[in-house]
Image (cartoon, rainbow, N blue to C red; front, top):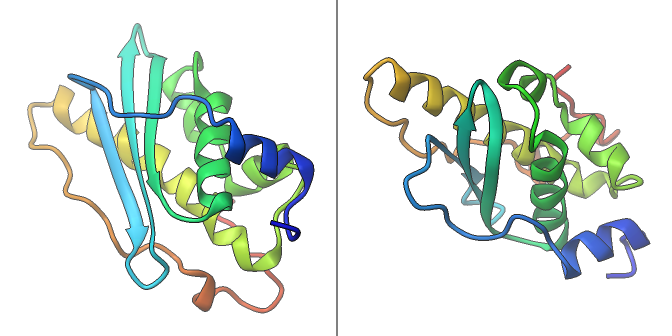
Length: 150
């Protein structure tokens, strides 16, 4: 745990929005089996706003901290506002992450985007999205740790 700052430790030790959601409007599951980090994000949307958001994450302290932080950052926001969230926003809100843990902030961003995409599909009468287990793993991030999706 010594690699993490106090904000990351706090978000890991006391995460917000943890747990499954009954009858969600959208679900996004992302991860990478090579890393062992898997995030499942549940959304409830009312009047184009994220009324409630929950997560289940299997992974390291950074994966749990980024899941909690990202869900807090988009709760109450419109769908369009939530789609603007980047992994860099999440990492900055946590006061930074070690370079080898940047992929966790990417998973949080991708999980929210996948849940929103699933929500939109369901509204169109399309089947739910299958889980995506092809996310970036820390073994695949360049040495700079600058993996972003902006």
